[in-house]
Image 1 (cartoon, rainbow, N blue to C red):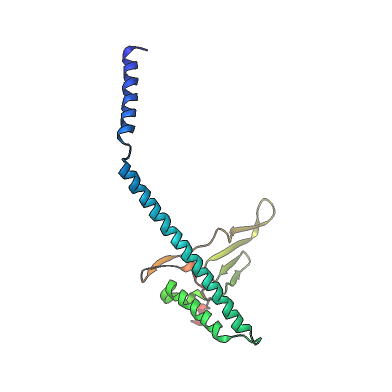
Image 2: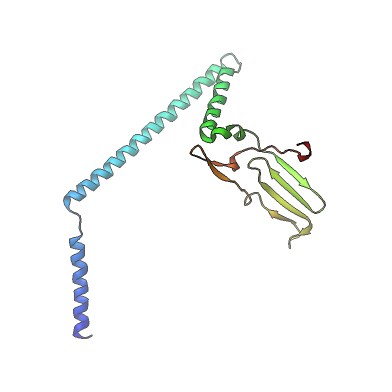
Length: 179
């Protein structure tokens, strides 16, 4: 190595050491950063405590409503209607005008002919499976073009500042000849 290379390495090392010394935070900045970290930790602890208290209160409320409903061996219909209306109010908050469509039970409709068999889910209105009848895979299994795990499809849009996804709704099939 020549003299210029050694001098260059020494200058680079001096610059790096000088930069790290010069950019170290002051004691005031360290105290302020610690104060912010402590404040965030306190807020998180308070949120955890509030969540635990809310969970405990809801558990106690469920226990008392269960006891009220099972005292006489009869079902307390007041509690059931409150639960249903509570669920509907949650649906109303989440889906707004489309809350009625969010209530239902998942069912499948099958469209079939000589060539294919299509299964359509009413939840989300998407095609669950498509099977070609005349074809098989290399393993001699039926050829399925759509798989329920990978074929979910939903259309997202905004309504009253809410994101609405059609995959959350239950659709009802209709016969076009009846329209």
